[in-house]
Amino acid sequence: MITLTHSVAFRGTEACLVEVQCSLTPGLPGFSIVGLPDKAVSEARDRIRSALAGMAIAFPSKKVTINLSPADLPKEGSHFDLPIAIALLSALEIIPSDMARGMVSLGEMSLDGTLVPVTGSLPAAVTAAAEDLELICPAACGREAAWVSGARVTAAHSLSDVIRHASGQTPIAPSEPGEVSRTPSFHDMRDVKGQERAKRALEIAAAGRHNLLLVGPPGTGKSMLARRLAGILPALTAREALETSMIHSVAGLLDEGGISRNRPFRDPHHTSSAAAVIGGGRLARPGEVSLAHNGVLFMDELPEFPRNILESLRQPLETGEVMIARAQAHVKYPCRFMLVAAANPCRCGYMTDPARACAKVPVCGDDYLGRISGPLMDRFDLRVDVPPVACSDLDLPAAGDTSEDVAQRVTAAHALQAGRYAEHPDMWSNADAAGSMLDEIASPDSEGRELLVRVADKLGLSARGYHRVMRVARTIADLEGSATVRYPHLAEAVGLRLARPVAT
View 1: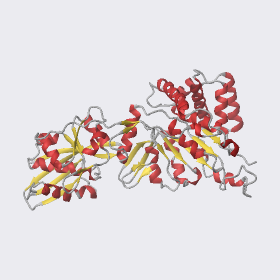
View 2: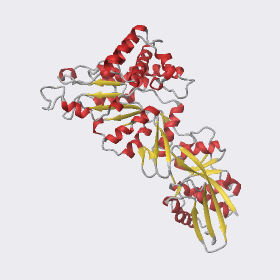
View 3: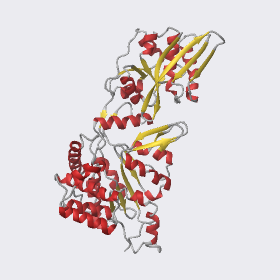
View 4: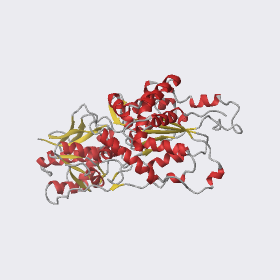
């Protein structure tokens, strides 16, 4: 007799349905698992034996064979413990076979049968709902999985709870979704004194999801400015929250099943490896670029990052997704993020200060910022100088707009873009506009077009740079509520793109 149940194997954020088959045959007692299991899956045998013994269930004195189908799909992770145990208990007629067939389960088991939380319950719930199957998961994962519309989620504390639920003795109530959180930012734009140009660039970048580079001497507030982005970005939409949470679920970063409406803000250190930033490793896990999906990737001290990491950013910035290729798997993760970077103008940091600059000025600046290749630099829509602030200005009272004021304007601009791109699923913001759509929404007036052509000819704008200036101008027009792109919008967009520190 062969019994079966279901589980999932993860390929990026996709949960592929796996059929878990169990066969009991006469012969020497044994327990084998086939179907490309990794070490963690193979070790399920000992955990299941101990759990059954703790519940006074005799292990069968037959040959037990577990097959994980499809057999050519790699099976990785300890979450196969629970489905293997359910298939075996179904073969022992402890769990009804029809109940086992209607389940998708995942969960690691302790030696006493307690279910330990695992990653990936959110994408597993998506697959279970699509197949009209019940999802069985550890209690700590239930609130996360219940977010999927149409999913039937049962969260159990132990294997014995699963047995009582499946046999009808003590049914478990369906899980309720966790809380939606929107944590306010405690970093206010009003705290930044001076730097009006940089604050304006932050607002434009947030409104249109434009990439931003801040260049200035040490201590001028580049990192402080970047961290205030979290307070002016609008909340994630329901679709964006689900997309982002699925990536964080695979990475094991969701907090007690709650889904956050805050946009991600990821800031990897410049000593991070390529696998940590781009993604990869033995299990092809998502990297910082994917964890920043629908949010911000902040790279402080950008020239200090290894060149291979910087060059690896170029394709994800253009396509909004990253392909991690390994010998046994090709995994694709979404990574539509806003890149915000900060850099000193040179290695010593004081190229623009004659009193403190080193003897290598201006060559040191070209060498240092030259670590950022031309193709990557071309992908920054906004490049802003962040000059030092006089100490006398620091004693002045806080002035200017608060983060809440700026956030209202940014949210209004996002609402305009949501309506504009509602019928274009591949476009989400002005930064995504391309082709005929860009010509339609960002065509400037005659005076503005003349300026753009003149700048492109004299300063050698690439075709990418030309289009990025048009996108930024469209965002500036949105912030003003203007239906058309005019000369002042293009002039500001050009000025923000061409900024570069110079030695004095």
